[in-house]
Length: 224
Image (cartoon, rainbow, N blue to C red; front, side, top):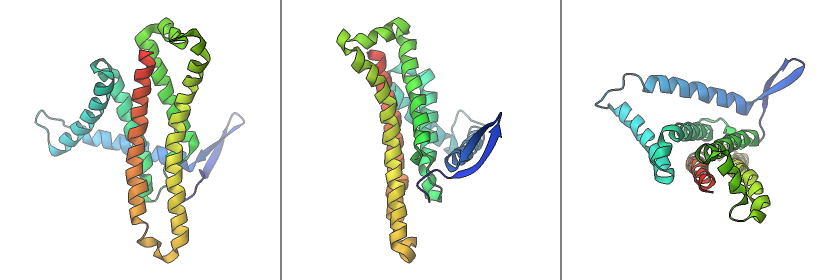
C-alpha cells in the first residue's frame, strides 16, 4: 500500500501528456463494477419484491429519507439520484482497502473533484430555486458589509468537503501501513481490528458525513 497515487501509465494527445494514476484505475474498476451491479440487480423488478429487490428498495428509501427529511419533498425527484450516486460511488472508493486496494479518496485530487461537483450542485440548486437575482442578492444578506465573508464562504464549502474526506482516509492508510511495517510477521492477524475500524467504519462514516454536508450546505445556500 502506498501513500501517494502511483503512476500506472501515461499517454500523449496533441503534444500534451496525461498521467493515469492508481487512483484513476481504481475508479474505472469501481464504475465497471457498479454498472454491472446495476444491470444485474435492476432486472425483472416485480410488484411483490424479492429479497434482492427488497435490499435495493431499502437503499433507495435510505437516500429518499435523507433528502426529504432535510430538504423537503420537492427535492426528491432531482436531488435523490445525485445524492444516491455520490454516496454509493464514495463508499465503494472508501471500502477498497478491504480487498487490498488503496482507497482513491486518499488522493486529494479525487476528493477535490468530488467537492467541486458538490459545490456546483449546491450553487446550481440555489440558483434554480431562487433565480440568479435571488442567488446574487444572498451575497449581501443579512447586511451588505457581509459580501466579502459570503464570497469566502463559497470557497470554504468545497475546501471543507475536500479536506475532511481526504485527511480522514489518508490518516487511516498511513496508520495501517505503519502498523504492517512495525509488526512484520505478526501482521497477518493483529491488524484485522484496524482494518475493521479504518477500512469499514471510518469509510462508511466519512461517506455519510460527505453526503450529509452536501445536503446541509444545499439547504443553507437555498435559504440564504
